[in-house]
Image (tube, rainbow, N blue to C red; front, side, top):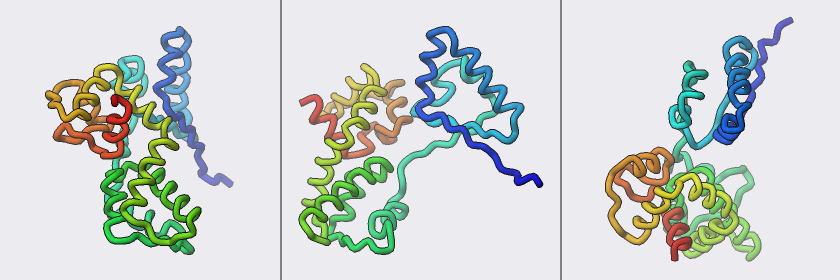
Length: 212
């Protein structure tokens, strides 16, 4: 009896494979992955990362013509609220006036940062044996998340590259940043919004801290 099951092969942070191309043996590896995609219907490839195939160049676009690109971006407030208010049935933390809105405003629904701030908030209230969070508690949890999530922020900063870092530094100092390829790239990375401002206040706060 055929069960019709498939194998999902997920390659996280796949941009690192560009190093194999530089080393000279990445071409055969990408050819193998293309072969798997085209000739093994029971195997599904998933590439996850910050950059698209076109951004990585012809070595990728020429081999993976038929890929489906799915952008994973911010969660909406309506999507965040159930996760923050009742992640499990026995969750008994309450949000005081303005606290939940403060958390949503701080992270703008960025999935990792929303989870990071919520974790620090719950940890803080548990350690103090309290069940209601205030706006001040959320702000403190945000500061803690900048420490515990340091790897995330440094990775974002490195991915911005020197031109993006310079632009983010200017924005953090309230200086204007003209439209251009760098701003467009940071928008695609969800670092900036459509108006060229920081999309996530917590990221802006971290950048200010870094360049201070």
